[in-house]
Image (cartoon, rainbow, N blue to C red; front, side, top):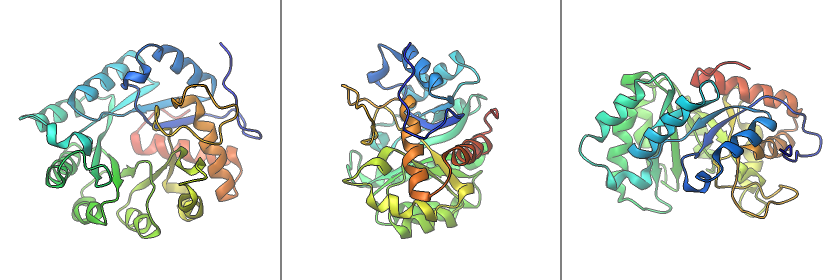
Length: 276
């Protein structure tokens, strides 16, 4: 197997990808090869995202199959909020009892796409925040263009939560402040590598406290646009996480090896993952 390309100046260091959609159909035919490339790139742990009940079940099965390397979240993405069936909360709660599930989610609000009606999104979001508080698990959170409504719902319950991460952060300075005030970590993806859309995140990167910072690919989406050579496929993979690290270290003016140690340590502490 060919070792994945690395950004110039980025050493081979242990990394944790806190957001990988390995249950997506884009990985159906070569998932084992994807995992091999990730290991070759230094990705020692991955948190496989659950986005509805069936995908949460599949994420957990993957975590069982790759113990110590893959872990899972269990939850309902806002896009899927309108499609939940009776008993969904109990099903997520049962999954959350498994030791390989390390967070409730992906949950939150998405008023950008509005694939589910906003009242449905809000009800399912609050129910999962309450469930996470009951389970003592952190939350894996999604927010896009909610106009502050996400934080209005989160903040009254934040003190009851075992922490959480605002995954794939793309918000404003005010959004960042409210997330930090609520005790959340911040997940940075390849969005920061996008010269078209990532300028705001690049400017805010220095304002994220080191102890709250994590990195992720959100694969198969958000392929870093700085990637060289660019793959023929637009599919993102965990092995490209070092490119997120490279841009983030540049924006923060930090040594990439030290930043890698910081983000890896943060992820291991929040999600109770084995330390490298």
